[in-house]
Image 1 (spheres, helix red, strand yellow):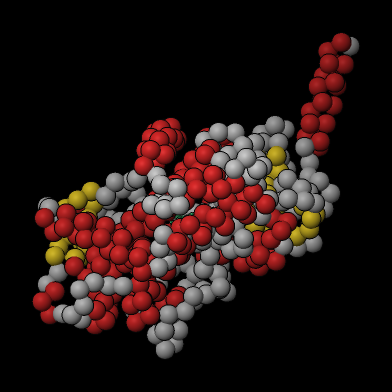
Image 2 (tube, protein in one colour):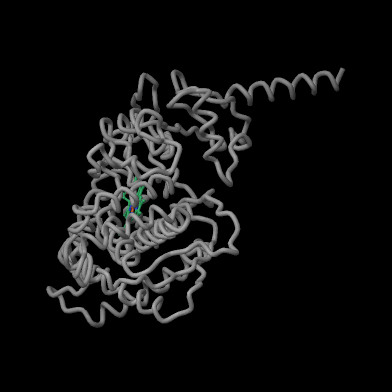
Length: 435
Ligand code: HEM
């Protein structure tokens, strides 16, 4: 009798657990979650993309899964994503708070930086100040172009002088350990700037920010030294892996599609002729090169799940109810390879970005930098870097897949940002005497 009562009690408890972790009313559909674990067993955390695609086929473009006990909505396809991030931007531009990553990245509590800051007036103020200051230092302008070209000269010299086969390192393996080191470097830089700075004549971002901290004085403001630290880490982390990994993909694809590499070089030679250096304006005369870079960005799918958003109030999306505080994740591949949006959604083909006249066109579904008020702060800088680096290196060098390297594996290594698997490349100086 006692055993029966205990079993009955346990069964009731289990039943209650299963059905109490259900979805709120009119919430997007999805697989039944397990108590505590949610749907974590159904999604391969090492590479969730394929699992998320399967769920989209079963439940549609907007569905939900439980990450542990917390529900998250997954958005697929340009229509649902634009509806949330653009048309209902005020409802869907928050960031989830209280996650482990919030603590790992920020310099101190209450210094959320930009990327992980929630959608509020402080985030707006910090993002606006950051963008304005970067623009004042040349972001997207000619002065930045000169800096990028200066760096490139350095790389070109090294490549010209060195052995022809070099290993490209994967740049980010120990990200978490590096946060600590990055913080230490930040404190050193801050101390250095405090000693050398002259108020009113800022030399760089840190000086500008410290001027703003002084200007605000003691007023309750979102500007502080801790906040400066978090923003510098944000810009550093958001701006390095993304661009560096895209460049790895560019050379990986160009080596494995030598006819595409040659066609780019032909266009570069025709446009640059006797000019010393490329400039960003040249892109308007290089539709094919532009199409190739964009196509590689499309297939590389650099930030596959973007940065998680969060609903900032009870709201609705595509007929479903979304309570305040719901995590919202964008599946970028569902747009970057969406059928109906691309001529060749499932193959690598620069024609995706060319019209019948061979002109460069950018389809609406090209959203590697996301859309809406939270879209990437560094898009212009990244586009300038990708163009100048690709054009300058292709003009000088031929990139060759080594004979003994075997078959290339195009499957990216999954992560917050994706990379190609480590590879070697053979680099030969081109004969540029004919240009
Ligand atoms: C190929 C290069 C890059 C790609 C593909 C990329 C992509 C992205 C994506 C998908 C987001 C998330 C947007 C969202 O939440 O909806 C983002 C945010 C951000 N990116 Fe980039 N990014 C790149 C380069 C850069 C660079 C060079 C910088 C800085 C100089 C930068 C700074 C940021 C910042 C600060 C945010 C957070 C914006 C906010 O939360 O308000 N990114 N980026």
